[in-house]
Image 1 (cartoon, one colour):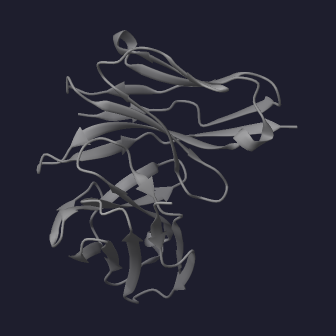
Image 2 (cartoon, chains in turn blue, orange):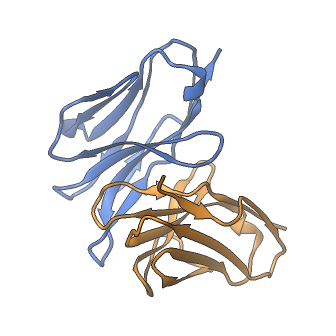
Length: 117
Length: 112
């Protein structure tokens, strides 16, 4: 079975603090993709990053960084020096397969991040 | 700018009504999806379409049907709306491989 667990339901931090959002996944596939999406109050999910299962290099994009560890089945997301605009719900997702062979994504339940001024 | 457009942002319908939620994408994507989002449950897949007139059930298809007559349009149909279908509905599209979804802005449906 494929599953994504985001154990943190809600996190509150003060502006400029660093914050890490956890994501743990389960899959039997040897090839898969992991994603992070941001959902601001406007409602539209915004794609942040895609990582394939063969690429365990950490990635940094500005204040965002991602740590992928296959040994622990985790794909954690860190925001450095958080800002009020980072307040949103963040979803981690894992690719799976339909019976047709096409990809589908399994989403975690999301982590609501509140950054206080 | 590529887009997935959902026809309504907010919708209020009565119990028993037939409801159509429309989604249009302009990226020539093969795959289109309908999810519903509920607090504490995340995004749950209702239906998926990988080609015109082709569809597959997702995790929670009961009470819903879909239609894809043209590649760019994917409709979600609630045959007889019920209060437990009050939710945020999100449409997405993607290329066949795992390149990531593009989402619409969502339709918040309230069934009274």
